Length: 254
Ligand SMILES: Nc1ncnc2c1ncn2[C@@H]1O[C@H](COP(=O)(O)OP(=O)(O)OP(=O)(O)O)[C@@H](O)[C@H]1O
Figure 1: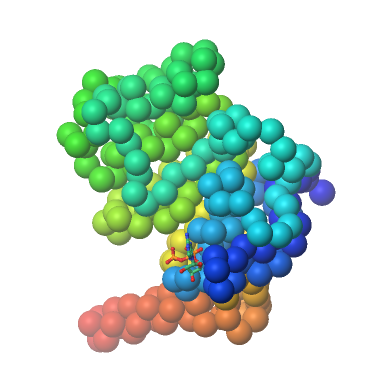
Figure 2 (figure 1 turned 180 degrees about the vertical axis):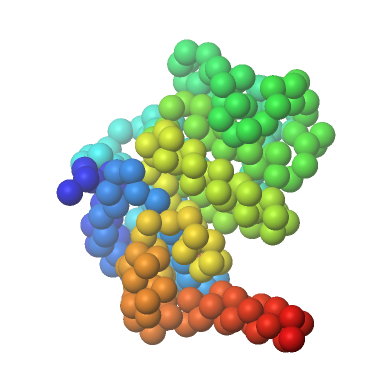
């Protein structure tokens, strides 16, 4: 068994009367790439943000490398966890290099090797001196990933990080993130609406519904009909699309 990176121990989060996360217990192995899939409002982002304490659970606890994330200062915790979300959040008045280096700089840690980080996310080194608004959406997303990894984080949280990108860029970046994950030995949790993306990138797919994990299966299990009804309803979408494309190709070839 690989060592454990994360453990959710009966984590519940309420916002007033809304039960956003409902008694989630779950362990995530070091080095795994986990996709968290589910409808809008099912609690994916809330669960993800209990890891880096942007949200504190109402009940339960989250353990990172065996220690409760609630013990110790949140900024130190967040330096160990790369977090990339759809809005990106680059500082518009700072260059790309300054954006990438901001985490280690604030922490008083050794200066980030910006060139190496740009290489890592397949950006040309000469973008270092540009401002974020002089980049494409896909390039900005790559800068955000470089920034997330700059403090040497081994856990990467991606919350609909590719959501605003065109499908081709999204596909390319997804594949590159998976390669980066493998190369750096990261543990990655990807929140996505897109079951096809989850099946293509992850080792393990969790399906959330109304605050609960209702399926926990490998892509192979899901593609072979496993994981239960809610998971199969999501798998049916890309499967149907693929079947339709095959039919159309056959019709056009006939
Ligand atoms: N700060 C908040 N205050 C009140 N309710 C919230 C807050 N954040 C989330 N919620 C509610 O908690 C539930 C879960 O929201 P969450 O953002 O975790 O879902 P999600 O699955 O990530 O959705 P999406 O895919 O649309 O991002 C929703 O009903 C949402 O309205």
